[in-house]
Each structure stands twice: as C-alpha cells, then as structure tokens.
Length: 335
Ligand code: KG4
Ligand code: ZN
Image (tube, rainbow, N blue to C red; front, side, top):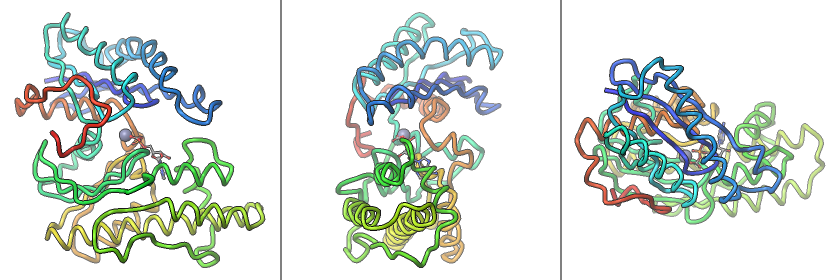
C-alpha cells in the first residue's frame, strides 16, 4: 500500500510518498522562507500562490524519485488543518482533483496528529497510551494519547507557542526567521550561570504553559546588555535552559498524573538537540521511555508525516469518519 502526502498548512510545501513495506520512498520540501522574510512574517496570500505553483511539480518529483507510477498509489492524504485557510485550500483542492481522476480516496489529516505520530515513520513504534508534548511554531500542548484519533488535551500555552517564543527572541539576537535552530546553535557556547531566567508557571498546579513573560524578560536582558557575541550566546543559553526546564517539569507532572511511562516529543522544536538530551536524561532517571523523530527534517513540517498518518487511517478504515474539508482550527480533541 502506498500513500501520497501533501502538506500546505503554512509556508512549507511538502510532498511525499509512504510505502507500507519500505517506509518513506521520497520526501520533498519547498521552503518559502525567502519570500516571507522580506515582510517579517508569513503573508497568507503569497503562501497560497506559492503552494499552488509548487505542489504539482513536487508531486511529479516524488513519483520520479520513487520510481513508481500514478496508478500504484492507493490514497492521497492532505493536511486539512489546523493552519492558514488559503494554503490549506490549495492542498485540499489539488488532492481532491488528483483523487477524483485517479479514483482513490482523499484523506483529511490533522497536522498535529501527524506531528505526534511522525516518530513511528522511523520504525520507532510507540505503544499507546502515551503523553505527547507538541511543540511547534503555533502550538504548545500536552496530550493524553489514548489511541489513533483519540486524544485528550491536558494543557497548553495560554499565550505564545514555544517555537514562536524561540523565533521572537532569536530575531532580537539577530538571527533570521525561523530562528529556533539558530538560537540553539548560539546557546551552545553560552555560559549557563551568567543570567538566570524565570521558569514560568512551574508552581501553578495545572499543565498549562505561558511564554510571554519569559519572552519579555529575555528582551529586557537583551536591551540592557552589550551585544558582543559572548553576551548574546550567554543570553541564548539562559533562554533555552529556561524553556527546556519548564517543558521538562510540566511533562514530568503529566506523567505523574497519568501514571504513563512513555513520552513523545513532536513538532518543529523537538528538533532541538539540547532539549532531546535533557529529556532523555530526565526519562532515564524516571525509568520511562522517550520517543522523538530522529531526523530534524521530519520534526519540522513535511509531507512524509502526512502520508504516514494517511496510511495509518486508510489501513484502519477510519478516513471516512471526518466530516471535514479544511479547518483553520482543528483541535486534536475534535477528531
Ligand atoms: O512544526 P513546525 O515546522 O511548524 C509548525 O507547525 O508551526 O515548527 C516550526 C518551529 C519554528 O518556530 C522553529 O523555530 C522551531 O520549530 N524549531 C526549533 C528548532 N528547529 C525548528 N526550535 C528550537 N530549536 C530547534 N533546533
Ligand atoms: Zn507543524
């Protein structure tokens, strides 16, 4: 069984083919960073137009690289939400048109479920139930994952998402958007003891997060200090440490409350090596298991995770149950 996956929820055009027996056959991504960076943020209309001109050429490329024919595909999976409505509609319409002409189903995929399951594409199959920490540019959520398509929300950010906070502080440190990975690189040589940043909401009993206070604290420190490379890397280090500690404390609380032993970290920020290292240590100390997607390019938005999730839904026969075309907001709890 083979599934074509199409991701167009934001500013990355991702197309991939997943094969039941051989895994990812090809995975192509077109990044629109250069187009949007001149405006300092993503312009939805420009993103939609770019997706429109990129999807079909990428579809041709993945078939060519996989060395298979159109008629070998069993289903098309596309990102139906959450995301920007214009970009989502491009993926939806192209998927519907291809599915109609190839006489196969088009399967709507929840982008956040795809992130959560992406570790399984690399043969690292996680047993349910588990705690999922979803950390991306737009989401910071703790999920109680019961089974495929059955999720409960345990907590989320009441303001900025982690990735968003990384990107905003990175910008103040002089790093181009999206700056999460660059900030982490800068933090490598930073002194962990020079600045002490707050760990927000760790004393509140719930599982919610807040990063706007930490962001303000970091921007004040940036404003009040010299911008020599050493100081900037010390600040980056203090910021990253504070974020990782906060995430780790809340994950431990979710594990304690649920009694689960498995933790999955997913979404773009899970590409962060320092975070992975600290979470690994934390889970080792607890005697639990940590799962994450090893290849950084499969942590950030990609078509392979959409194809894989489509494959899972197709196999389980649950793809007809969603009465959804596209949804800009589509909580995992409403699947
Ligand atoms: O999942 P994703 O590709 O897109 C969304 O669905 O939002 O996540 C993108 C986010 C960006 O904020 C980016 O800065 C962040 O993931 N990110 C990182 C790293 N790599 C990507 N943040 C921290 N450290 C990284 N290594
Ligand atoms: Zn994403």
